[in-house]
Length: 502
Image (cartoon, rainbow, N blue to C red; front, side, top):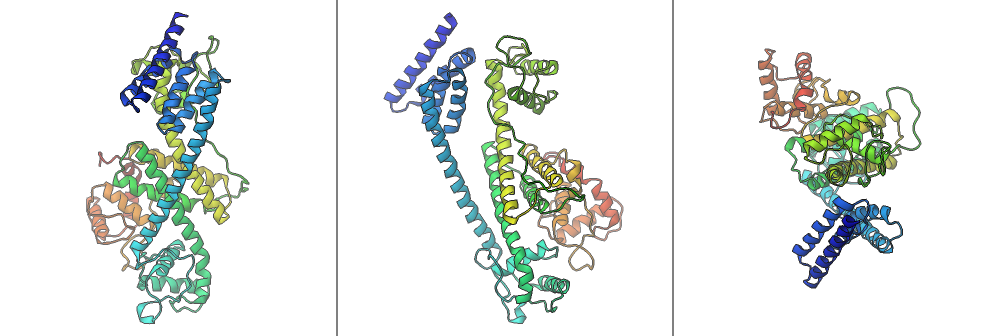
């Protein structure tokens, strides 16, 4: 009883700090004292006194952090479900959190639109990407429109259809050759000029390309916000590979499964509710102890992430007890194998990192869902599983700075399969994803002059020649069967190295 009374006295002291801070027009020092006092009460009486939750929620709300306020209020209402002051603040915090979310969404949308326009304009003469190609296009000598946004879109569409062209905004010789190839495929007059009949075959793909551009920009914005929140600064490799993985993701969900299966009517959301630990967790049979359920599952998830091996089964078993005790020992906490106030506070710090990661991954999934819905794509179980593997790989790349634990289901994306070489070598692929993969690996291996631009240029050619010398292969500067075999044996291990190791 005396201990509880001491907690109440500290709460009164915290209230006085806040009152004095208000009188002094928001003294930060006094507010910090109130926070420290409430947190001390939480550590000692967090299972019996609701006031520190309310006090911290009020401070968070006043500081413009309604999401944090909601977390404290939800915990406090479990102790005092009928507390009217907390319920009133809960409603206000929810309204404020919704307004903040709407404001962030509007800012993100505006920024994405501005970045998309800027990106497109920087690659061509001027203007945003067109919704469709309406002009006759051709080389400069043809007298047709030969540069600008429509040519950029034509080249993007040709890339999408598997042709090796650069997005330059200029109707060059490779673009002319790709148009001729497309016309031959569709049994059109082979002129190399984009006329009405050719546009009929091209414009349906324009919608897909535009949707990809918008979705990619939105997902890159999510990645940027996540890393900023974590206080990270991404390396060049992380930025380049993040874009690569997101482009792969958009390409993947447009595929069909390799084996026959039924499409899903509705995709499955595998994310758990994001709620902080608030209960005493421990072995079954102890008074006031929670021994199974979501909180235990989250505890096991934290321990696993920190390399304390436990089975995630939502049951507080002997292994969980042992590994939690090791966690407490390493963090200089009371070692009793029970999640009490001090241990819970430390665990919640790690849990917030997991929540941030899950929120980013779920936001990316939302963008993909909208992309699939816009294009009328089906949900295939095997494709959805690979999608999950790709997004998981992306989050590991952002956290660790390297591609580690690449799942077998998507391993083929990280292997070379084509004959690669400069554009003036017949039969060689000189543009595209595999060229970028080759360049990423070469750069990681120390060939610093290589730029990751998806074009088999002179620096790439020279780096391949140097690699061939190191492996005592013929110095052709091109990726043939022997070079490909040597590189494929190295790719996964090279990409799994951090920048410090390379």
